[in-house]
Amino acid sequence: MLKKYFYIFLISMVPLVELRGAIPVSQLQGLPIVPSYIVCIIGNMLPVPIIYLFARKVLEWGADKPLIGGFFSFCLEKGEKGGKKLQAKAGRGLFLALLLFVGIPIPGTGAWTGTLAASILDMDFKSSVTAVMLGVLLAGIIMGIASVTAVGMFF
Image 1 (cartoon, rainbow, N blue to C red):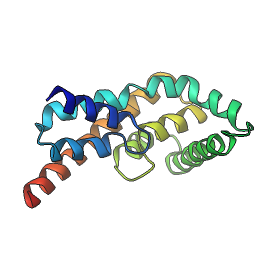
Image 2 (cartoon, rainbow, N blue to C red):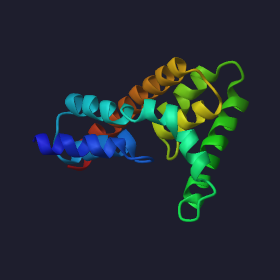
Image 3 (cartoon, rainbow, N blue to C red):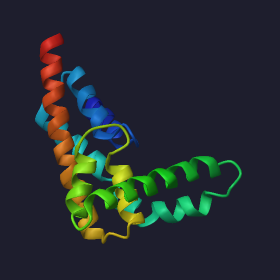
Image 4 (cartoon, helix red, strand yellow):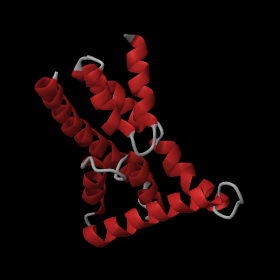
């Protein structure tokens, strides 16, 4: 059982997959939803401070390197594009926009992208982490309901 929790913890840390993929996996494994939700939230949030503090610097450093430059440039462009999109739609409501950007579980809008966008937009650390955390909680609730419903219907 502990191995299954560790597995969903690791899945929730993976960029683009994050908690949006880990919660459905937990339900397919037959784990209880509440402990799974908590484990996935922790796993998804663990990289957020590191991303905020270091990702932009590392991506800018590696963008012109031969082997990694293409991927690093892609990540920077994705963060900048997400940030500009957020800022254009949000205006002064950037906190709420970031929360919803992370919280609505569609591909490419999770904690990794949201945190990178927040750092590119120079949002302060506390506001960024709080908005991302609330967004992750919202995405977890949505995915939990969808997963429990789908597993109940099909299995």
